[in-house]
Image (cartoon, rainbow, N blue to C red):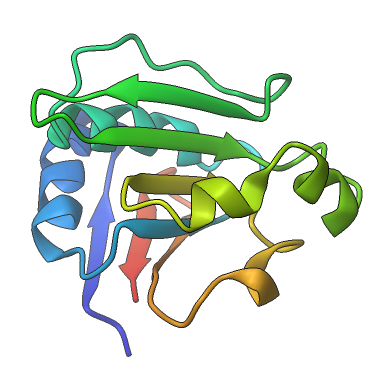
Length: 138
């Protein structure tokens, strides 16, 4: 079920991120979209909307980055693009992160989606021919 569908440009990403945060029903968010569509850019703004002043960067090589918020909640940002199989995810302890009460923003979740409980939000982002994006929050 689609909770929210928005067409946007990168220029108004901050407002889009706040709208997404206002409509979340879970602290686990799976982000889907092609390379270069703006998943990490959205995550940067989501982290800020969740109350963090930390500098957000892509965890492509570290796999997970941790950000503190002003509400004593943590935000874990995963980039699983380089993960080859579920065993590699288990080796860095992904199940510990998944079972925490903190926010989990997961880019490229395809390899682990079967291991995530039923309660999560899914964000799909597609690039439109005019370089705008369409975001669907499920």
